Structure formats: C-alpha cells, structure tokens
Image (cartoon, rainbow, N blue to C red; front, side, top):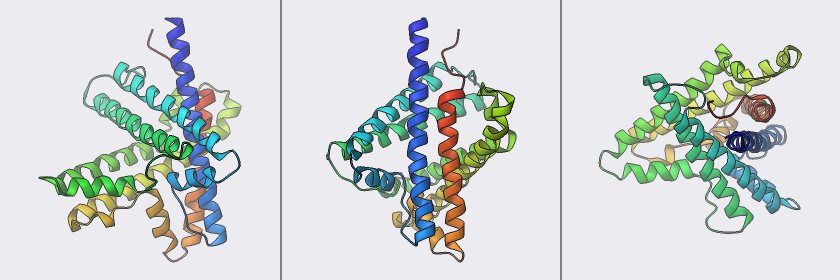
Length: 262
C-alpha cells in the first residue's frame, strides 16, 4: 500500500509541475506579445515555440509524460475521491470536473507527443473543432450551450477558490512561505477563472449564432483582447495572471498534500 501511495504522490507532483511549465511558457509568450506587438498564442502556440528551440522536441516529450502523469492523478482524485469531496451533489460535480480536467490534459499530452514525434495534424483550435462538430448533431446548439455552462462553472470554481483561499487547506508550507504563496495563487486562479468565463461566453454565443467560428479558446481570447483599446496593457495584465497560475501549479508540485485515503 505504501508503494501505491508513493506512486500516486509522484504522479501528482510531476503532473502539477508539467502543467505549471506549460502555463509559464504561455504567460511568457503572451507577455512578449504585449511588449513587442506580436501575436499572442495559446498552449498549442507555446508548444510550437518550444518545438522550434534547440532540444525542443525532447522537452515536449518530457512535458507529454508529465501531462499524462497529471491526467492519471486527476482520474485518481475523481474516482477514488482522495480529497474527500464526497458523493453529494456538490462533491459529485467537483469530481466530474476533475475527470474532465483529466481528459483535457490527456489531449494536451497527445498534442505534445504529436509535435515531439512529428505526427499528425497541428491544428491549434480543438475547442472550435468540437463546437463545429457538435452543432451538426441533433440538439447540437443546446449541447454547446450546456458545454459553455460547464466551462463557466469551472471558471466560477476558480474564482471562488481564489476569493476564499480554499486551496490553502491542501498546502503544507511554513507561514513565511505562505505569505507569498497565497497572493500568487489567488492571482493565478483568478486569471484562469476569468479566461474560462470568457471562453464560456464565446462558446454560448457560437451556439446562438450557429457559427463555430465565433468560438474562442485561450489564443482567440488573447487576440480579441489585443484588438481592444488598451489591448497591450490588458494582455500584459492577463499574461502576468497566467504566469501566476503557472507558478501556482509549480508550487503545488512541492507543497500540495497528495496521496490515497488511508
């Protein structure tokens, strides 16, 4: 049993670290775009940027393995309820969200592996593709709206966690360390929550217009921000938030309490 605890612990820590590195890369690219009038890019764009660096494919392969570890950890969290969310309405919703997060990060891991091994398509708009496919189904627009509401729920959960500091109950760190961990984590969770809420609005709007091209993922949102008045300033603020979220994930790799229920 102790061996299983150690395996799960390492899966979680490696996974949190990999997720953090991905978002740190996105934040750096977004900040560079804000400062240099370049086009902002999302997670897939960050992967392509990494791929173009010396040794980039090896780094991508490492990230793919880390994201697989994170995906497995999310499945463990959800199905075994290791965080004791329970089986009530709220607990079931939280664990369903964890399972959804597992699928999302598994798809990111596959995208990393594709780039590392030079396989398959490199289309960086999976959300738009999913909406386009779903709109053609019977009751498709309603399903897209439901999906948008799920994304909005995830965003609201991030904002709630940031506002209440609920993440702190999982952190095992000294009071001195928590003095800087707390604000960094709150900023990062808030930024990701805002991004999710914006994505949800665009997804729901695409259902109302019956046009999947209205859907915007992270990259689309950043490009939309760039086109607004004071867009560079707003993109710069968002990039700092994404950097904070990446830092929060890396922090989780070191101080989050993880393991199986005893």
